[in-house]
Length: 224
Image (cartoon, rainbow, N blue to C red; front, top):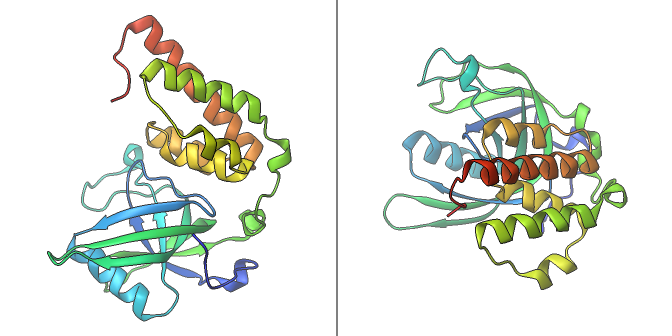
């Protein structure tokens, strides 16, 4: 999804972001994430994001292992900011959005705010490479990734648009497969925090191979 505004580095992004804690949700730079917004606090968050002109929402996972409250869970320290690039109203009180990922961020601190949604002061400088499209994609072992994808599809009796995959650049392919992968919060967080695209692809391959091996030995049913 093209973005009308160009972001060249951390200085182009706000230092404070509204954050949307969502377990299992992985947004990566230049990836697209659809969202169905229905909770009042997040409807207000979207309204404010559209009103202030930035149209930014920080996607981050709740860190349930270190949470003491279900209503206010701890957050992982790294998330990804996305810009609202598609927006529609449903007529029944919901918003349908698409976020396009821009860059990962590290949480400096969560702020005490009056808004019903949470806000964090963030830092993008650890992830300056995120602003460079297709950075490091020549180091990705594309064949190993495709071989693992083929094994996953066969094991789960799934089909895929191979023409689209063959034409996708390595960055788009790795990030799309990571975002769509059916793994848990810890695995998604590991892929999010990978230092580069090559490492993210290697983590995805390793997780998938371990999952396939476990299912072969345990007899677990395929992904539905």
